[in-house]
Image (cartoon, rainbow, N blue to C red; front, top):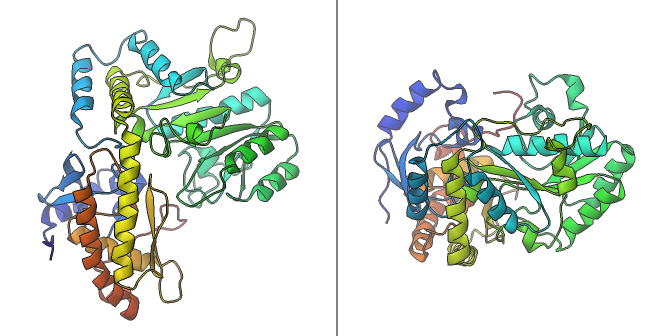
Length: 442
Protein backbone atom coordinates (compact mmCIF):
# COMPACT_ATOMS: atom_id res chain seq x y z
CA UNK A 1 0.00 0.00 0.00
CA UNK A 2 1.35 3.43 -0.97
CA UNK A 3 2.08 6.07 1.64
CA UNK A 4 -0.73 8.59 1.93
CA UNK A 5 -0.31 12.36 2.06
CA UNK A 6 -2.43 14.00 4.75
CA UNK A 7 -0.59 17.19 5.70
CA UNK A 8 -1.63 20.32 3.76
CA UNK A 9 -1.18 22.81 6.61
CA UNK A 10 1.10 25.25 4.77
CA UNK A 11 -0.93 24.84 1.59
CA UNK A 12 -4.06 25.84 3.48
CA UNK A 13 -2.31 28.90 4.91
CA UNK A 14 -1.17 29.88 1.42
CA UNK A 15 -4.65 29.31 0.02
CA UNK A 16 -6.24 31.50 2.68
CA UNK A 17 -3.98 34.47 1.84
CA UNK A 18 -3.21 34.31 -1.86
CA UNK A 19 -6.68 35.31 -3.10
CA UNK A 20 -6.35 38.68 -1.36
CA UNK A 21 -3.18 39.34 -3.35
CA UNK A 22 -3.73 37.76 -6.78
CA UNK A 23 -7.15 37.65 -8.52
CA UNK A 24 -7.98 33.97 -8.91
CA UNK A 25 -5.01 33.00 -6.77
CA UNK A 26 -2.90 32.14 -9.83
CA UNK A 27 -1.81 33.55 -13.18
CA UNK A 28 -3.75 31.07 -15.27
CA UNK A 29 -7.23 29.89 -14.31
CA UNK A 30 -6.24 26.29 -15.03
CA UNK A 31 -4.03 26.38 -11.92
CA UNK A 32 -6.77 27.81 -9.69
CA UNK A 33 -8.09 26.27 -6.48
CA UNK A 34 -11.42 25.52 -8.16
CA UNK A 35 -9.61 23.17 -10.55
CA UNK A 36 -8.41 20.84 -7.78
CA UNK A 37 -9.93 19.02 -4.82
CA UNK A 38 -9.63 20.65 -1.41
CA UNK A 39 -7.07 18.06 -0.32
CA UNK A 40 -4.35 19.11 -2.74
CA UNK A 41 -1.21 21.26 -2.83
CA UNK A 42 -1.94 24.98 -3.13
CA UNK A 43 1.47 25.80 -4.62
CA UNK A 44 4.66 24.09 -5.78
CA UNK A 45 8.08 24.98 -4.35
CA UNK A 46 10.30 23.07 -6.80
CA UNK A 47 10.42 20.49 -9.54
CA UNK A 48 13.05 18.00 -10.65
CA UNK A 49 12.62 15.58 -13.52
CA UNK A 50 9.01 14.41 -13.31
CA UNK A 51 8.50 15.14 -9.61
CA UNK A 52 7.36 18.28 -7.80
CA UNK A 53 7.24 19.27 -4.13
CA UNK A 54 4.64 21.39 -2.34
CA UNK A 55 4.85 23.85 0.56
CA UNK A 56 4.54 21.05 3.12
CA UNK A 57 7.37 19.04 1.56
CA UNK A 58 5.05 16.49 -0.04
CA UNK A 59 6.44 14.89 -3.21
CA UNK A 60 4.29 14.16 -6.28
CA UNK A 61 4.66 12.53 -9.66
CA UNK A 62 3.77 15.22 -12.19
CA UNK A 63 1.28 14.30 -14.89
CA UNK A 64 0.43 17.44 -16.87
CA UNK A 65 4.02 18.76 -16.74
CA UNK A 66 3.38 22.46 -16.34
CA UNK A 67 0.12 22.44 -18.32
CA UNK A 68 1.98 20.48 -21.06
CA UNK A 69 4.80 23.04 -21.31
CA UNK A 70 7.60 20.92 -19.81
CA UNK A 71 8.57 18.51 -22.58
CA UNK A 72 11.92 17.29 -21.25
CA UNK A 73 11.57 17.48 -17.47
CA UNK A 74 11.64 20.01 -14.65
CA UNK A 75 15.03 21.72 -14.17
CA UNK A 76 16.38 19.71 -17.11
CA UNK A 77 20.13 20.25 -16.91
CA UNK A 78 21.10 20.87 -20.57
CA UNK A 79 18.39 23.53 -20.85
CA UNK A 80 19.20 25.12 -17.49
CA UNK A 81 22.91 25.24 -18.37
CA UNK A 82 22.21 26.91 -21.71
CA UNK A 83 19.97 29.48 -20.03
CA UNK A 84 22.49 30.16 -17.27
CA UNK A 85 25.24 30.71 -19.84
CA UNK A 86 23.10 33.10 -21.88
CA UNK A 87 22.08 35.11 -18.82
CA UNK A 88 25.69 36.17 -18.39
CA UNK A 89 25.41 38.08 -21.68
CA UNK A 90 22.34 40.07 -20.62
CA UNK A 91 18.64 39.59 -21.20
CA UNK A 92 17.19 42.58 -23.07
CA UNK A 93 18.72 45.36 -25.16
CA UNK A 94 17.87 48.57 -27.01
CA UNK A 95 18.24 46.78 -30.38
CA UNK A 96 17.43 43.15 -31.20
CA UNK A 97 19.65 40.50 -29.61
CA UNK A 98 21.96 38.94 -32.18
CA UNK A 99 20.74 35.41 -31.40
CA UNK A 100 17.28 36.32 -32.72
CA UNK A 101 18.51 35.53 -36.24
CA UNK A 102 19.90 32.16 -35.15
CA UNK A 103 16.68 31.37 -33.31
CA UNK A 104 14.55 32.29 -36.32
CA UNK A 105 16.65 30.28 -38.77
CA UNK A 106 16.77 27.16 -36.60
CA UNK A 107 13.04 27.13 -35.89
CA UNK A 108 12.11 27.75 -39.51
CA UNK A 109 14.36 24.86 -40.56
CA UNK A 110 11.79 22.63 -38.85
CA UNK A 111 8.94 24.07 -40.92
CA UNK A 112 9.98 24.21 -44.60
CA UNK A 113 6.52 25.41 -45.68
CA UNK A 114 6.88 28.62 -43.62
CA UNK A 115 9.43 31.34 -44.32
CA UNK A 116 8.97 33.87 -41.52
CA UNK A 117 8.57 33.87 -37.74
CA UNK A 118 7.64 36.26 -34.95
CA UNK A 119 8.35 35.61 -31.25
CA UNK A 120 6.12 36.25 -28.22
CA UNK A 121 5.96 35.39 -24.52
CA UNK A 122 2.52 33.75 -24.44
CA UNK A 123 0.21 31.88 -26.74
CA UNK A 124 -2.60 34.43 -26.74
CA UNK A 125 -0.30 37.05 -28.24
CA UNK A 126 0.59 34.70 -31.09
CA UNK A 127 -2.96 33.55 -31.87
CA UNK A 128 -4.36 37.08 -31.73
CA UNK A 129 -1.59 38.27 -34.06
CA UNK A 130 -2.59 35.52 -36.48
CA UNK A 131 -6.17 36.81 -36.46
CA UNK A 132 -4.98 40.33 -37.28
CA UNK A 133 -2.73 39.11 -40.08
CA UNK A 134 -5.54 37.07 -41.61
CA UNK A 135 -7.86 40.06 -41.56
CA UNK A 136 -5.22 42.31 -43.08
CA UNK A 137 -4.34 39.79 -45.80
CA UNK A 138 -7.91 38.92 -46.82
CA UNK A 139 -9.59 42.26 -46.16
CA UNK A 140 -12.28 40.39 -44.23
CA UNK A 141 -13.44 40.95 -40.65
CA UNK A 142 -14.73 37.65 -39.25
CA UNK A 143 -12.57 34.94 -37.68
CA UNK A 144 -13.67 31.43 -36.76
CA UNK A 145 -12.78 28.59 -34.41
CA UNK A 146 -14.41 25.30 -33.30
CA UNK A 147 -16.78 26.30 -30.50
CA UNK A 148 -16.32 23.01 -28.65
CA UNK A 149 -12.56 23.49 -28.27
CA UNK A 150 -11.48 24.84 -24.86
CA UNK A 151 -9.09 27.74 -25.42
CA UNK A 152 -7.37 29.86 -28.03
CA UNK A 153 -6.73 33.23 -26.38
CA UNK A 154 -7.59 35.46 -23.44
CA UNK A 155 -8.26 38.28 -25.91
CA UNK A 156 -11.75 39.50 -26.73
CA UNK A 157 -12.08 37.75 -30.11
CA UNK A 158 -12.10 34.39 -28.29
CA UNK A 159 -13.30 35.14 -24.75
CA UNK A 160 -16.29 37.01 -26.13
CA UNK A 161 -17.66 33.71 -27.46
CA UNK A 162 -17.37 31.92 -24.10
CA UNK A 163 -19.50 32.06 -20.96
CA UNK A 164 -16.92 34.46 -19.46
CA UNK A 165 -17.74 37.35 -21.78
CA UNK A 166 -18.32 40.02 -19.15
CA UNK A 167 -16.22 43.06 -20.07
CA UNK A 168 -16.27 42.31 -23.80
CA UNK A 169 -18.28 44.80 -25.92
CA UNK A 170 -21.30 43.04 -27.41
CA UNK A 171 -20.56 44.36 -30.90
CA UNK A 172 -17.08 42.84 -30.80
CA UNK A 173 -18.52 39.38 -30.21
CA UNK A 174 -20.10 39.55 -33.66
CA UNK A 175 -16.69 39.43 -35.32
CA UNK A 176 -16.10 35.80 -34.28
CA UNK A 177 -18.10 32.81 -35.48
CA UNK A 178 -17.89 29.13 -34.58
CA UNK A 179 -18.47 25.66 -36.00
CA UNK A 180 -18.43 22.13 -34.57
CA UNK A 181 -15.06 20.41 -34.53
CA UNK A 182 -14.86 17.09 -36.39
CA UNK A 183 -17.90 18.15 -38.42
CA UNK A 184 -16.81 19.49 -41.79
CA UNK A 185 -20.43 19.95 -42.80
CA UNK A 186 -20.86 22.52 -40.04
CA UNK A 187 -17.70 24.25 -41.28
CA UNK A 188 -19.12 24.40 -44.81
CA UNK A 189 -22.45 25.68 -43.47
CA UNK A 190 -20.63 28.42 -41.54
CA UNK A 191 -18.91 29.64 -44.70
CA UNK A 192 -22.22 29.60 -46.57
CA UNK A 193 -23.87 31.61 -43.80
CA UNK A 194 -21.15 34.29 -43.98
CA UNK A 195 -20.11 34.32 -47.66
CA UNK A 196 -16.96 36.30 -48.37
CA UNK A 197 -16.73 37.53 -44.78
CA UNK A 198 -14.52 35.01 -42.92
CA UNK A 199 -10.80 35.85 -42.86
CA UNK A 200 -9.55 32.64 -41.25
CA UNK A 201 -10.25 29.52 -39.28
CA UNK A 202 -8.01 28.63 -36.34
CA UNK A 203 -8.02 25.18 -34.76
CA UNK A 204 -5.85 22.66 -33.02
CA UNK A 205 -4.85 20.04 -35.60
CA UNK A 206 -5.43 17.15 -33.22
CA UNK A 207 -7.16 16.47 -29.93
CA UNK A 208 -6.96 13.31 -27.86
CA UNK A 209 -9.77 11.59 -29.77
CA UNK A 210 -9.28 9.73 -33.03
CA UNK A 211 -9.83 11.55 -36.31
CA UNK A 212 -9.47 10.64 -40.01
CA UNK A 213 -5.92 11.10 -41.31
CA UNK A 214 -7.10 13.51 -43.99
CA UNK A 215 -9.38 15.59 -41.76
CA UNK A 216 -7.10 18.62 -41.45
CA UNK A 217 -6.30 18.64 -45.18
CA UNK A 218 -10.02 18.64 -45.96
CA UNK A 219 -10.48 21.48 -43.48
CA UNK A 220 -7.74 23.48 -45.20
CA UNK A 221 -9.28 22.80 -48.60
CA UNK A 222 -12.66 24.12 -47.46
CA UNK A 223 -11.05 27.26 -46.03
CA UNK A 224 -9.15 27.96 -49.24
CA UNK A 225 -12.20 27.25 -51.39
CA UNK A 226 -13.96 30.08 -49.59
CA UNK A 227 -10.97 32.44 -49.72
CA UNK A 228 -10.08 32.10 -46.02
CA UNK A 229 -6.75 31.28 -44.39
CA UNK A 230 -6.16 28.34 -42.08
CA UNK A 231 -4.23 28.87 -38.84
CA UNK A 232 -2.91 25.72 -37.16
CA UNK A 233 -2.63 26.12 -33.40
CA UNK A 234 0.28 23.90 -32.33
CA UNK A 235 0.54 25.28 -28.79
CA UNK A 236 -0.26 21.86 -27.34
CA UNK A 237 0.53 19.50 -30.23
CA UNK A 238 3.91 21.09 -30.99
CA UNK A 239 6.87 18.93 -29.88
CA UNK A 240 4.35 16.23 -28.83
CA UNK A 241 2.54 14.62 -31.74
CA UNK A 242 5.75 14.78 -33.79
CA UNK A 243 8.80 17.00 -34.14
CA UNK A 244 8.05 19.82 -34.62
CA UNK A 245 4.38 18.84 -34.49
CA UNK A 246 1.25 17.86 -36.38
CA UNK A 247 2.30 20.04 -39.31
CA UNK A 248 4.86 17.31 -40.08
CA UNK A 249 2.86 14.32 -38.88
CA UNK A 250 -0.14 15.18 -41.06
CA UNK A 251 1.96 16.54 -43.94
CA UNK A 252 -0.18 19.65 -44.34
CA UNK A 253 0.58 23.29 -45.14
CA UNK A 254 -1.34 25.78 -42.98
CA UNK A 255 -1.09 29.43 -43.93
CA UNK A 256 -0.01 30.33 -40.39
CA UNK A 257 0.87 28.33 -37.28
CA UNK A 258 1.22 29.18 -33.60
CA UNK A 259 3.68 27.49 -31.25
CA UNK A 260 4.44 27.50 -27.53
CA UNK A 261 4.39 25.48 -24.30
CA UNK A 262 6.79 22.55 -24.87
CA UNK A 263 9.07 24.28 -27.39
CA UNK A 264 11.24 25.80 -24.62
CA UNK A 265 10.73 23.20 -21.86
CA UNK A 266 8.60 25.48 -19.71
CA UNK A 267 10.33 28.79 -20.37
CA UNK A 268 8.14 31.60 -21.66
CA UNK A 269 8.66 31.44 -25.40
CA UNK A 270 6.08 31.24 -28.17
CA UNK A 271 6.07 31.86 -31.90
CA UNK A 272 3.94 32.64 -34.91
CA UNK A 273 5.16 31.18 -38.20
CA UNK A 274 3.73 31.53 -41.67
CA UNK A 275 4.00 32.01 -45.38
CA UNK A 276 6.11 35.00 -46.39
CA UNK A 277 3.40 36.77 -48.38
CA UNK A 278 1.23 36.87 -45.26
CA UNK A 279 3.83 37.40 -42.54
CA UNK A 280 5.62 40.23 -44.33
CA UNK A 281 2.52 42.39 -43.93
CA UNK A 282 3.81 42.92 -40.39
CA UNK A 283 7.16 44.18 -41.68
CA UNK A 284 8.50 47.65 -42.47
CA UNK A 285 10.13 47.08 -45.87
CA UNK A 286 7.06 47.83 -47.99
CA UNK A 287 7.36 51.55 -48.83
CA UNK A 288 4.07 53.18 -49.72
CA UNK A 289 1.93 50.34 -48.34
CA UNK A 290 -0.27 50.51 -45.27
CA UNK A 291 1.42 49.27 -42.10
CA UNK A 292 0.05 46.31 -40.15
CA UNK A 293 0.96 46.57 -36.46
CA UNK A 294 1.77 42.96 -35.66
CA UNK A 295 3.40 41.66 -32.45
CA UNK A 296 5.39 44.38 -30.70
CA UNK A 297 6.52 43.26 -27.26
CA UNK A 298 9.51 44.30 -25.17
CA UNK A 299 10.12 40.81 -23.85
CA UNK A 300 9.49 38.78 -27.02
CA UNK A 301 13.21 38.57 -27.79
CA UNK A 302 14.58 37.86 -24.32
CA UNK A 303 17.83 36.02 -24.82
CA UNK A 304 17.51 33.33 -22.17
CA UNK A 305 14.12 32.17 -23.48
CA UNK A 306 15.50 31.78 -26.99
CA UNK A 307 18.45 29.90 -25.56
CA UNK A 308 16.03 27.58 -23.74
CA UNK A 309 14.19 26.91 -26.99
CA UNK A 310 17.36 26.15 -28.93
CA UNK A 311 18.62 23.85 -26.17
CA UNK A 312 15.27 22.05 -26.15
CA UNK A 313 15.40 21.66 -29.93
CA UNK A 314 18.92 20.23 -29.67
CA UNK A 315 17.73 17.58 -27.21
CA UNK A 316 14.75 16.65 -29.38
CA UNK A 317 16.94 16.29 -32.45
CA UNK A 318 19.84 14.38 -30.89
CA UNK A 319 17.99 12.10 -28.45
CA UNK A 320 14.85 11.17 -30.41
CA UNK A 321 12.66 12.54 -27.66
CA UNK A 322 9.41 12.00 -29.56
CA UNK A 323 10.01 8.24 -29.85
CA UNK A 324 10.73 8.00 -26.12
CA UNK A 325 7.69 10.05 -25.13
CA UNK A 326 5.38 8.04 -27.37
CA UNK A 327 6.74 4.75 -26.03
CA UNK A 328 6.08 5.95 -22.48
CA UNK A 329 2.58 6.96 -23.57
CA UNK A 330 1.93 3.53 -25.08
CA UNK A 331 3.20 1.79 -21.94
CA UNK A 332 1.07 4.08 -19.80
CA UNK A 333 -2.11 3.34 -21.76
CA UNK A 334 -1.49 -0.41 -21.59
CA UNK A 335 -0.72 -0.60 -17.87
CA UNK A 336 -3.42 1.79 -16.69
CA UNK A 337 -6.10 0.19 -18.85
CA UNK A 338 -5.06 -3.17 -17.42
CA UNK A 339 -5.38 -1.82 -13.87
CA UNK A 340 -8.84 -0.46 -14.65
CA UNK A 341 -9.95 -3.70 -16.30
CA UNK A 342 -8.82 -5.78 -13.31
CA UNK A 343 -11.17 -3.71 -11.16
CA UNK A 344 -14.02 -4.26 -13.62
CA UNK A 345 -14.38 -0.53 -14.22
CA UNK A 346 -13.64 -0.17 -17.92
CA UNK A 347 -17.19 1.08 -18.53
CA UNK A 348 -16.69 3.91 -16.05
CA UNK A 349 -13.04 4.96 -16.41
CA UNK A 350 -11.56 5.22 -19.89
CA UNK A 351 -8.38 6.48 -21.56
CA UNK A 352 -7.83 8.02 -24.97
CA UNK A 353 -5.60 6.27 -27.52
CA UNK A 354 -3.37 9.34 -27.95
CA UNK A 355 0.09 8.37 -26.71
CA UNK A 356 1.31 11.99 -26.85
CA UNK A 357 -1.26 13.12 -24.27
CA UNK A 358 -3.54 10.61 -22.58
CA UNK A 359 -6.93 11.93 -21.48
CA UNK A 360 -9.17 10.24 -18.90
CA UNK A 361 -12.98 10.16 -18.80
CA UNK A 362 -15.01 9.28 -15.70
CA UNK A 363 -18.64 8.14 -15.90
CA UNK A 364 -21.38 7.40 -13.39
CA UNK A 365 -23.87 4.52 -13.32
CA UNK A 366 -25.89 6.24 -16.05
CA UNK A 367 -22.74 6.25 -18.22
CA UNK A 368 -22.71 10.06 -18.14
CA UNK A 369 -19.52 12.07 -17.63
CA UNK A 370 -19.35 12.85 -13.91
CA UNK A 371 -17.13 15.63 -12.60
CA UNK A 372 -17.78 14.67 -8.99
CA UNK A 373 -16.34 11.20 -9.55
CA UNK A 374 -13.45 12.74 -11.47
CA UNK A 375 -12.68 15.03 -8.53
CA UNK A 376 -12.88 12.11 -6.11
CA UNK A 377 -10.38 10.18 -8.21
CA UNK A 378 -8.09 13.23 -8.32
CA UNK A 379 -8.28 13.48 -4.53
CA UNK A 380 -7.27 9.85 -4.09
CA UNK A 381 -4.43 10.04 -6.61
CA UNK A 382 -3.05 13.19 -5.00
CA UNK A 383 -3.28 11.49 -1.61
CA UNK A 384 -1.02 8.77 -3.02
CA UNK A 385 1.56 11.16 -4.43
CA UNK A 386 0.35 11.69 -8.00
CA UNK A 387 -0.52 15.25 -9.01
CA UNK A 388 -3.31 14.22 -11.35
CA UNK A 389 -5.81 16.50 -13.08
CA UNK A 390 -7.26 14.28 -15.79
CA UNK A 391 -4.43 13.90 -18.31
CA UNK A 392 -1.00 12.33 -18.54
CA UNK A 393 1.57 14.11 -20.72
CA UNK A 394 4.69 12.01 -21.32
CA UNK A 395 7.99 13.87 -21.19
CA UNK A 396 11.59 12.77 -21.77
CA UNK A 397 12.25 12.33 -18.03
CA UNK A 398 9.35 9.89 -17.51
CA UNK A 399 10.55 6.31 -17.14
CA UNK A 400 8.84 2.93 -16.91
CA UNK A 401 9.10 2.99 -13.11
CA UNK A 402 7.04 6.19 -13.04
CA UNK A 403 4.33 4.50 -15.08
CA UNK A 404 4.37 1.58 -12.63
CA UNK A 405 3.96 3.99 -9.73
CA UNK A 406 1.05 5.72 -11.47
CA UNK A 407 -0.65 2.37 -12.17
CA UNK A 408 -0.26 1.33 -8.53
CA UNK A 409 -1.84 4.59 -7.41
CA UNK A 410 -4.68 4.01 -9.88
CA UNK A 411 -5.31 0.53 -8.50
CA UNK A 412 -5.67 1.86 -4.95
CA UNK A 413 -7.64 4.96 -5.94
CA UNK A 414 -10.16 2.91 -7.90
CA UNK A 415 -11.28 1.24 -4.67
CA UNK A 416 -12.52 4.59 -3.38
CA UNK A 417 -13.85 5.48 -6.83
CA UNK A 418 -15.93 2.27 -6.77
CA UNK A 419 -17.48 3.26 -3.44
CA UNK A 420 -18.28 6.68 -4.87
CA UNK A 421 -19.78 5.06 -7.94
CA UNK A 422 -22.02 2.85 -5.81
CA UNK A 423 -22.90 5.22 -2.96
CA UNK A 424 -22.36 8.69 -4.38
CA UNK A 425 -19.09 10.63 -4.48
CA UNK A 426 -20.30 13.08 -1.82
CA UNK A 427 -19.71 10.53 0.93
CA UNK A 428 -15.99 10.33 0.16
CA UNK A 429 -15.00 13.64 -1.43
CA UNK A 430 -13.73 16.29 0.99
CA UNK A 431 -14.93 19.68 -0.22
CA UNK A 432 -16.61 20.49 -3.52
CA UNK A 433 -16.08 19.07 -7.01
CA UNK A 434 -13.94 21.09 -9.40
CA UNK A 435 -15.70 23.68 -11.57
CA UNK A 436 -15.43 24.57 -15.26
CA UNK A 437 -12.98 27.37 -16.02
CA UNK A 438 -15.48 28.87 -18.46
CA UNK A 439 -18.59 29.42 -16.36
CA UNK A 440 -20.91 32.41 -16.23
CA UNK A 441 -21.40 32.48 -12.47
CA UNK A 442 -18.70 31.85 -9.85
